[in-house]
Length: 88
Image 1 (tube, one colour):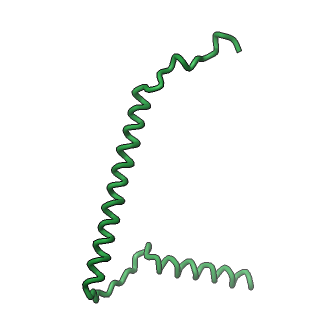
Image 2 (tube, rainbow, N blue to C red; image 1 turned 90 degrees about the vertical axis):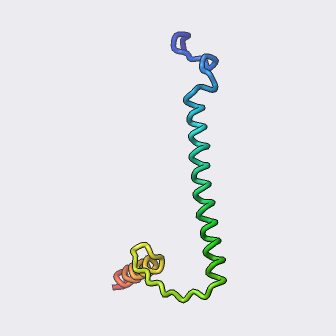
């Protein structure tokens, strides 16, 4: 390695503006995410305390595609179907 193509790190500043902006952006984004999760948790706790005090008799019919019961039923049907095909 010759002197012409070497690079010394003493020439580079440790705290340049790009690094400072990246650090500030990381802190701000994580703070916003933490606030969102905090409010989601508080809302779930509030609903749990409200529903435990009240005798809620609402019947909920959830036929959306992302319902866990629907997804598990579909997964179970597919796994049974593949087992039957492998036996035949």
